[in-house]
Length: 276
Image 1 (tube, rainbow, N blue to C red):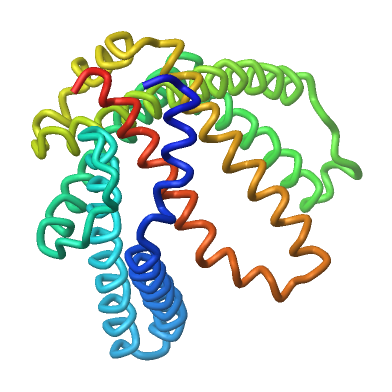
Image 2 (spheres, rainbow, N blue to C red; image 1 turned 180 degrees about the vertical axis):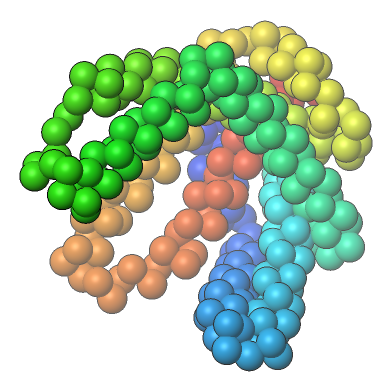
């Protein structure tokens, strides 16, 4: 499909079955409520062990609902891959299993770039430079406390350590941005592979997921994903402007946000249909 056809189809897709969208909204609200209750009860858990246990249970329920929602979104991607105009129904157990698999995919595709960034940070000596800065600041603070110095002095050692830290941090952050953006694209392909094959192994095949990008067309993948981001950002920006004048309308975000999520997932499926 052409790029604009993908965006147009994906944008109208969620409106084809409002009932399903509302079910998703209700589940998302429930997940949010349980997560919020878990947080509050965990705070109270420092006072009562029983509250701590109830907080853990609330988080587990929220996570289980989240897996169902995640699995359903994979089925939305699948509808795009198969060029099916019907909004998929919830298939609770299948959605749950798929959502759990997608949870594993998300962890793997986060751990890999995080490890790469950690290695770069080690090579550029971020941790060593940070320790040196800490030692110098601690020494200056100790001198102030003991009266050995009347003012905080930026010594040559501290200045040198801060420069080295700034350089190493800049290099590491630059690499982090590039690596995480690349893996965001690859993870998107991995989710499409999970939707297309139903296989966790296929989704975790990082090299094949990466190869899917040139198979579709690097330019097309970048343009579609950027358009998805732009459409969502523009709509959210306009709504935020409206909400600033009419705060009560912010309740609409409960429906609009899931609508935009459906739009994004459908677009990814249509994009991947080129090679499915």
